[in-house]
Amino acid sequence: MTRLSTANAASFTASVNVGWGWQVRAMSVKNLDACLKAAGATWADVVKTNTFVTDYQAFSQCSDVRMRYFGVASPTSTTIQIGGLAQPEAMVEIELIAVVE
Image (cartoon, rainbow, N blue to C red):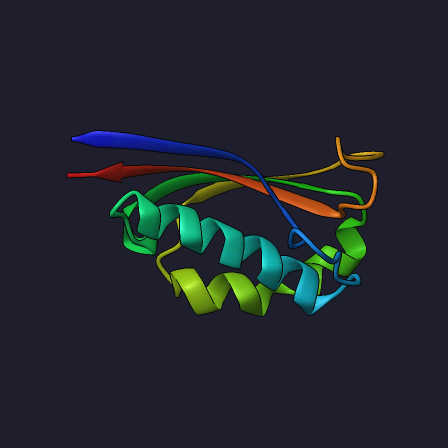
């Protein structure tokens, strides 16, 4: 059994930060998807997520992104609104823990 932990899956690419809304959350999730694939894991292996957002109201309108990747059987999650992230232009960071057997 292998445990995979990620940190700082932020809402931008190396060249451009995307605006707030569905695209922001989708970019964070795409970054996590790449991490999972690189480790030989899938979204079904994810057991916990921690999400840090600078605007919870805007973030809560994007729940369809989570459903697209996890479906109804989503893992335990925590979402926290904070005043800012380590990279000032970022608006959402998602950490996850996955267990691969």
